[in-house]
Image 1 (tube, rainbow, N blue to C red):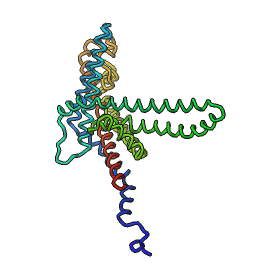
Image 2 (cartoon, one colour; image 1 turned 180 degrees about the horizontal axis):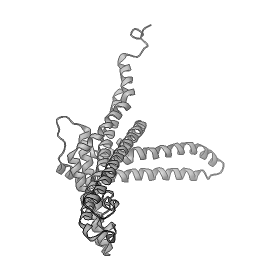
Image 3 (spheres, rainbow, N blue to C red; image 1 turned 90 degrees about the horizontal axis):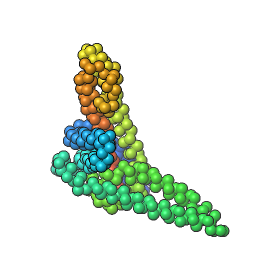
Image 4 (cartoon, rainbow, N blue to C red; image 1 turned 180 degrees about the vertical axis):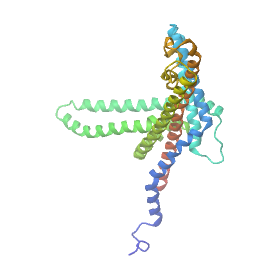
Length: 329
């Protein structure tokens, strides 16, 4: 009997649903590839470069204060650098979430709006960390209590025999969920508008129903971010080597090319041996270090842009997959 006339066969609507469910991981991965488009996001570029520059300046000031044994100023400046990185990075994440959500008819936030919203909401991420830490502590205490019961005579070995498989699987899955969900996806939940408690509930729902899909997406994002970082490093190293070699010969700067390239890898004026630089080459060496520092900042920000957009896309795709599963019921 054919499928269309067999009353026991599932309806075509159910077959379509199964096809859609099987295609979910592929659609999510295809959406994840869109994170490379983040390199064209000028607002995120500007915001993250500003955050990087301001935090770097504050850390340099803290280092100088520490060198002068002005410990209170060093602590204050280090705390200010952390404040800038935390709230500035969350503001960049909120801009990336706007692009990932793709709300029709709603323009993305301006930089100022994202910064103000970050100042109002980013601390909810700390709440997520506290709640998850309390849950982990309670679970750990429960496990220790059960292990203590295993010391009882006669019944202790029986409890231990049952506890070993349950605890091993539970602890392993909890660690996997922490690495794949809590660590990377807590911030996107806050950026999408959830409170700390709502974010924890969303993460636990994803852990119960979409853990393997999350593993695939996070692994794919790691690969894309690594490729972006590798491509950026290749461009910086090759370009820096060619320009440094040409500068030594054309400008006649009597310093090793590696010294001119030092700024490309985050080294500043204080990190080089001033005695190795001839007096006539000081100006060009300093200029190369400053220009290389700009390139170094760009090279750091680009993989960060890809990661921020990708983690937002992954969170949105997981949430949509979860809602679709609830609707299919």
